[in-house]
Length: 68
Image 1 (cartoon, rainbow, N blue to C red):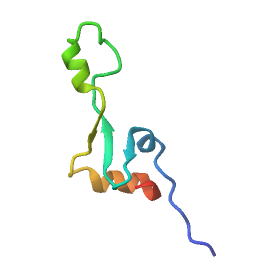
Image 2: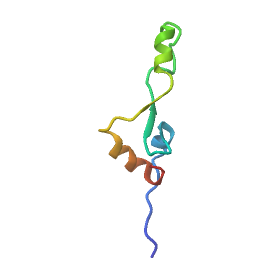
Image 3: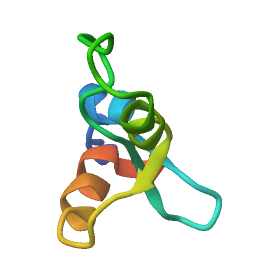
Image 4: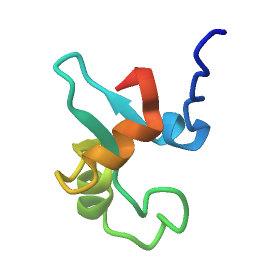
């Protein structure tokens, strides 16, 4: 019998990205809509990726499976 395999969590695979060095990156919140009234300074700050919090890494690595 072959060993059963776990599937990658599809929601997590869309939301998180693993760098070459193994860090898990995520996008900042508040960048999807209602941007018209937000200052440009704020929209620039919330664009781009940031490293995932240390507290969440273990949980997300489990969801990503072999991708992490």
